Image (cartoon, rainbow, N blue to C red; front, top):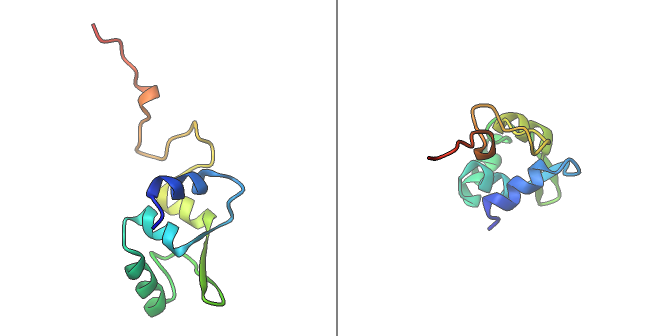
Length: 92
């Protein structure tokens, strides 16, 4: 199982063009079995396009970034998320 932080690191990497089903499952917080079942039954997952290469399932990274509101620039937080470094306050 891919930990969500590894999948998120790959998603933020501009060189990443596709993710596999286990990475998508980790990012969406669902089981791999549910991910594969949904793709098998509907041909998609959360409206994301699916690319089948033999038995492998790949999902383009760009729509995943858009779905999750993730930018490739690590200094820009996804919409609605404030980074701790942006809100540092002096505690007295």
